[in-house]
Length: 427
Image (tube, rainbow, N blue to C red; front, side, top):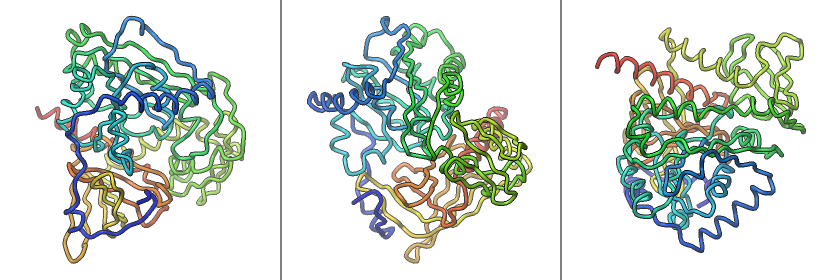
């Protein structure tokens, strides 16, 4: 089945399907597939003139834990070149295995459902390091960055690497979002740079506190592709710089209207108040009437987060939308269950539907998800929100595609922060 296909199944048919195996140990990459991976990855990194800077890497030997930022599929190819000729096992989301599970497992991938606590991952990563003697590659942001800036990192990351007591290396890439932004997949010719840093030795992990480890991780993971562009005088020519930018910049800073922004070619504009921003070759925002509020894309993006936080604090945030429900029980593909209602508020996500005369309900409390996965125009099906249970992943497509799923990205994170702060204070 093609990923783009919409294939309906009943709830009972989904229940009868075999579930994706989340517990099997990762395989050491087959030698011939490792050679194939090098052939598919490394030449493109040379064509793209990727610059890889290594800091103190002469002091570390594999196996080690490699933590990478995540902006596009190109990240994997750069990582493959960065630790060449060593082998690795990769943590990959279940959707990455669709129609190719056998291949993915044989090249060393292990599957995980996003934003779900999974004790098996600890054993699998220990197997990677101790048995396979391979590099354990983790993308802790768990999704592509929406705007080329650092996404939230889980608090559990420091605990995980401290538990392993293996060296930790970071690979932070700059320019990958500019090259292939998640909201506009037209690839651009952009010089990119990656910095590979030996961050923690075994001894460091033993003496540093979890707070100190997480603070150092946060600092190491700082990146901003739009700063990188300005600082390196990188021009992006062409007529599609703003295409789909309204999917991430959905709220007008002039009339304060949600979902009124639209984009075309190099222009971002509000259909409600008619303010127009021209996106220049440096991705700077230039209001055509000279009344601009933001000149920098990440500033607009961060402002939207603050607006969602205000809405939550005022007790006004409550989203109720009709959605098409797709289920991903295993790597065979997505199956559409029907239409339901998705509610999101201070109590979390509530997904309800009447499917084949049966009540269908999924509840995700606030503290069960520090983040949420969203997609833009996912394989031609539309924008969607995605969250998982222990044995399924649901892709939810609003029937009204004017709604920006980006707002959920902010709301989930801000609601989690508030609930987590309250929980900590009550200890």
